[in-house]
Image 1 (cartoon, one colour):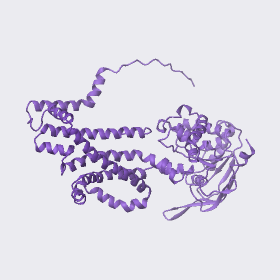
Image 2 (spheres, rainbow over the protein chains, first blue to last red):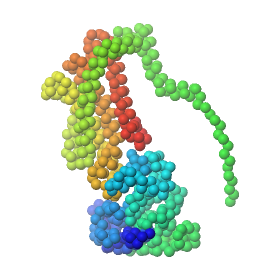
Image 3 (cartoon, each protein chain N blue to C red):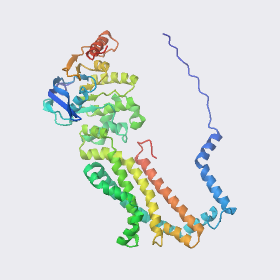
Image 4 (cartoon, chains in turn red, green):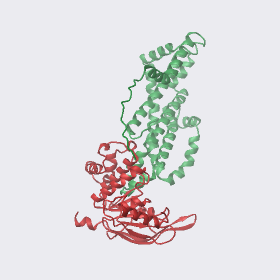
Length: 254
Length: 271
């Protein structure tokens, strides 16, 4: 890894606030949140529904605007969507009229690469997510897990500095989810990329993240938990289980 | 805990029996064959007047004769050119207008009441108006067909554009797509299946209106032939022209289905 990639993909949240209007009432979801995300860090955001985790991710993606405060990426304020960021959604959001290869190349083509160049690079990431045999398949022919992997390949193909994931495995069955989590951990290890992962799965957060941002919806301030477990992480190790118990305790669960 | 591995015995091989094939054929074509046989028998046996319902072989002979001596071919040509011109004009106006209206809520809101009003007004009721405006010649015939075919295409296209998954548009935007790219790469391809529903509906409507227009003040065309044969009591020829119309309709639909399959290979449903 070069020094340049090491210092890029840095995110700074500065006094970020956002509220919604619900039947005339103002509902604050983020209150003056400040946080620094390091280059190539994996940050997980967990919390109950309504705590603002998806809102925070949409702000980072530039799909929504904050009421006040700023997001700086490598020192530059975010004003909208940007080519240094890529989003992976809960649904794969593939274009049904494009093949797997064309879907993965889609982001690159939008950025002005020729079709041939885009598809060549797309091919590399299709291999990375293990879908070589399905390059020419239509999205409707894929299982949920495969479709989600195509979405991940599409995001990686544009070689973003920051990967934003919004409950990426939330719609998958339990078995697929487990293997996809392992796969994402492997891919993150191979690619120099900052990862912000919104999830409601505490185990997923511990498995993938360097730090976990815990948001609440009862007005108490958010907290930041450092996951100092060696990688690759073992879900069944005593430390892992202890970490999960501690996080669950934060939500009053056990 | 105990783990046991199950072996895999080869499943027995089962051929598709003839009976199953025959049953499949019968369930698809049985009624058609039955209908044809019934018509032929009933007419030949004189259970209905053969003057009103001539046996099918006489109709087939009249059809063949009309095609062989070129008389019906002329009618087909002129009918197809009327319906075709009107249909293509409706496509050329309806699809672009629908694409624009589907994306611009303000335009759609403004035009919708007018559109709904015209849609509910039968094109045939307006035919006398078109004749007054355009004369009894080709122009009014083509225009009445155009009028009737425009609305299914227009409404289907508007509907298709409005139904496009917002999440796909957001995805494209998050990858930096501008308005034109969102339109070309997401909205347009996503609307194609809905547009085809409109095209197929319009093709049927075009033939329907064609016949009506040709029955009034025409001296050529398949619709004219139906009416004319009835006046002259050439009943086999009348039925020949009616069947010809059915075949034209089936052919038009067939062409659109093939085109739709080619353009929508990605979609599982094509019906």
